[in-house]
Amino acid sequence: MAPRTSRTVRTPGPATDITADAAPAATTAPASERGPVPLQEKLADRDGFVAVVELVPWRGVLDDPGGKRARIMATALATDPRVDALSVTDNAGGHPMASPEVLGRELLTAGSEVIVHVACRDRNRNEIASLGWRLASAGFRNVLCLSGDYPVEGYAGLARPVFDIDSVALLTMYSDLAAGRWPGEGSKGGHGASEVPSRPQFYLGAVVNNHKLLEAEVMTQYFKLAMKARAGAGFTISQVGYDARKDDELLKWMRGAGIDLPVLANAYLLTRGAARAFHSGRIPGCTVTDELLAVVEREGASPDKGKAYFIELAAKQAAIAKGLGYRGIYIGGAMSHEDVTRILDTAASYAPDDWRAFAREVQYAIPREFHYFEKDRATGLSSETVSRTYLRSKKRAARPPHVLRSPVAYTVNRMVHSTVFEPGTPGFQLAGRLHERAEGLHLGKALHVIEQAVKAPLYDCRDCGDCSLPDIAYLCPESQCAKNQRNGPCGGTHLGECEVPGKQCIWVRAYDRLKPWGEADAMLDRPPALTDNALRRTSAWASAFTGRDHIGKRIAAEQAARDEAGDPKGDAAEGRAG
Ligand code: SF4
Figure 1 (tube, rainbow, N blue to C red):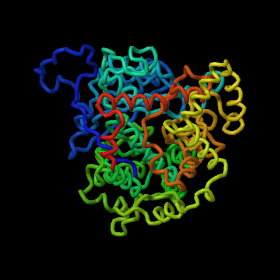
Figure 2 (cartoon, rainbow, N blue to C red):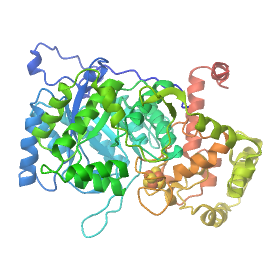
Figure 3 (tube, rainbow, N blue to C red):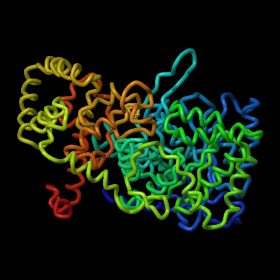
Figure 4 (spheres, rainbow, N blue to C red):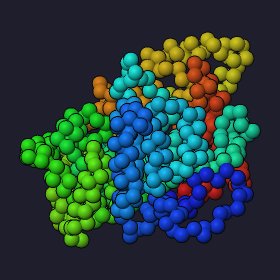
């Protein structure tokens, strides 16, 4: 189980506070003129239930027919009092579309509360920072932070993705910007933080996807959610799936882990075509099982092509979400304003307890899907009892000697790392001194060649110079993760396979490697890894010994925090831990 993580909701403020000592504006305007109630405020109301509708931009400019259609629908939704916010996607599915800012600005003008998606796929960290300032300047206050789906097309060929940082690092960056921090080389304090005057106060969102087959997929999603909460997420949205027991499990797992974030439940308005695509596994992170597809095919053959059934299914999902304790519903899919109205009206027409029957009905789990909790026979949902099969498997896996259940190469890696590369150990200090001496003799380049001769065949190392092998059970994210995810898996795994077909997800493999050593649960109990591209094509061994890599910077930052607290050896922290 992840460590207890508690998030306090920030006080709603202006989108951008560009001067630290600016006086707060007097709010004398009537409520109708002050604009929409901020999403953050609505989600802070534990008795409330919000409706958010997702809009997918078109391909082209605002005055194109696609743009005009989107604007008409968006304006209708923006003025519908039942809709609390509109959420605009950022090249969803890896398809190039109009920027979410374009439609987002129209929605802001129409008086809507807007969630703008920011994905890391198409831009590096500097462009993401610029975008943050641009969004804040335009008045956006809610940002959904995503790694983004892998590109599937592009102008005159497939686009090359960026993935300079991932969703966790993006949350960290926007949280830092909100605090006026700009850490990094070139700043006044070296590895420390420099102050930046502009402090965009975004309400940051994250996505979680527990509709997965394998224990390794589900648990790593939960661990990553905990990391996202620590990195600054203020709310979360679940991914497309049609299993009420799993929806219930997510909230119960979060409660057990002490993650107090409002969650919006996904209710995707299906069509026959969408269901087939989700079922095929071609759309990352969206699950439709054989059983549900059979229902969809049957209903889809009706004269209305299943529309009434799909509307009702989404309405039932909204009712279930409310009953389970979700703070709102997130409606997605290709739909009209009328469809949204029908979903919300149908959901509102149900009796308060109807959701219990719906929750028994909407349980399209993947056959043999992992569940963290035992089933509650009375409700058909999750109990509070952790799965006995899961606990038994942990016990079995942890029985020594671990070496028998681990790949030999992995066991050797662990030994070498703990002997030579674990900061603070005598081996690390000795190796560091030897390395320093070799550098003094101008042998640094030769050592780098030797390093590559070892690491390229062993790990398919890409010489990034800021090594994450110890973070991911000695699997290289540069060569083996299509999105270079260094802080947990993206939501795109399908039956344990990578979103980009052809291999297993490295985080699934890492979980399986760590479980026998009893280390899987804590695999993401660490600060986010942000790589430094200045180290590319330099020796990662040298980076480690000189503390230039992300692990060295993390240790230095922790030491600086201890020094500032007057506890240089961390005795107080150790005392607390004990
Ligand atoms: S290896 Fe895993 S984390 Fe990386 S892109 Fe594939 S599914 Fe996502």
